[in-house]
Length: 81
Image (tube, rainbow, N blue to C red):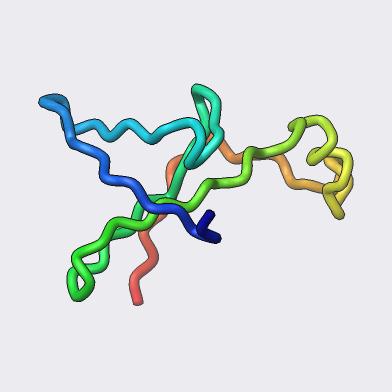
C-alpha cells in the first residue's frame, strides 16, 4: 500500500501510546528513542538497537582486563586551578 504507513493513535490517561503490531512489529522490552519536532509538531520514534551479549562485547575489548589499573577507593581530590 504505502512505503511508510501512517495511523492515528490516542494518548491514554497514563500518557501512553499504543502502536498497532502491523505498523511496528515489536516485543515487550523493546526500546525506542522519541524526539519531538516543535516546528512540524511531530513525534518521531526510532528503535534503539539492543545490546548484544555482554560476554561477547567484553571479549572484543581492545585492552586486556589485566592492563586496566585497579579502581581507587580514595575520594577524588579537588585541584586548585
